[in-house]
Length: 76
Image 1 (spheres, rainbow, N blue to C red):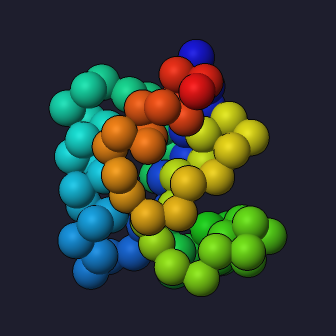
Image 2: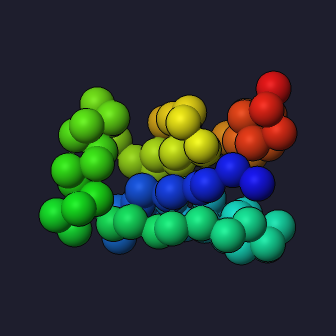
């Protein structure tokens, strides 16, 4: 099982959609708000300027697309 980290902001509708999807499928993930110091620091290190961002193991997905997520999570 790959480790998941979801970076979000409070008012982002795509972030909420990603959270709902992950929750509905039973995925375990660490949720990090981009306003939190740790979250901002991690996003800066990734080079992301927008959210949602999903870190899937060592891979990074910027934006939300369920099919792309599943492909990356399954190792494709």
